[in-house]
Amino acid sequence: MKKTFMVMFLLAALPATSVLADGAWGSSFGTLWTARSLGQGGGDMGVGLGLGDNSTSFTGSFAYGLTQFTDVRFKLGLVDPDGGDTEFSLGADFKWQFWNFGPTTTNPFDFAVGGTFEFVDYDWLSVLQLGGFLVGSYPAALSNNTTLSPYGRFGVRLESVSNGGSDSDLELGLSGGVEWQVTPTVALFGEFQLDGNDGLFFGIDFEVM
View 1 (cartoon, rainbow, N blue to C red):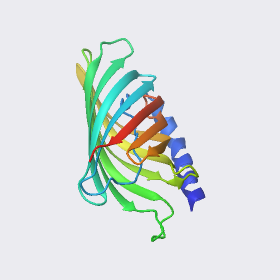
View 2 (cartoon, rainbow, N blue to C red; view 1 turned 45 degrees about the horizontal axis):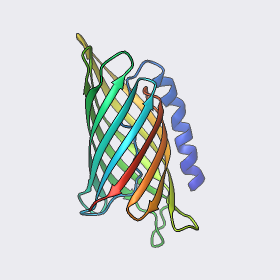
View 3 (cartoon, helix red, strand yellow; view 1 turned 180 degrees about the vertical axis):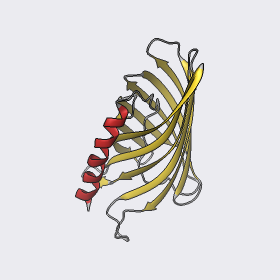
View 4 (cartoon, rainbow, N blue to C red; view 1 turned 30 degrees about the horizontal axis):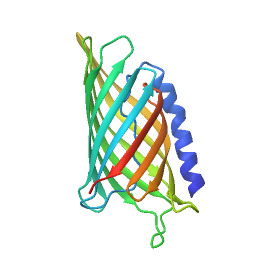
């Protein structure tokens, strides 16, 4: 089943890369999130750095566990696009984990579905993105009592770009990375993104609740 999971995301990359070639704007936040939920009342604060071919970004986030298997996350970023001034970007995610990997389940990995919103307004254009995604991850315990969780996300979004006029297109995106849970309260992220703003994203999350 784990092999099926990896093949699924590799196959998803083929149509995504062909669509991305048409000039999609893409996310300035990256994913930096596994499928595993925080649990009800749990809270994480995170910071991230994105090095994409459309923009460079520095972002902050706060995620909160609404129920045992549902999370919401709010994001604020500073985005420096190629050929423009640095501006603020706003975003939000919602995630519902419907597969939970563990010793008492038969699920082969953690799996979640969610929705996402992102908006940025530059001097010469604004970009609004609304969409949904699937994200899967597999927590692997290491011998040094840390956890390494490879993850992959496949998303579909409506991307609306306004520049005098308005142009809306349906776009696909793919990202894959690894979360390293170095302590019970600190996790490091590294990932690649293919969604128009192709590049590398890095992050760190701190458990605060």
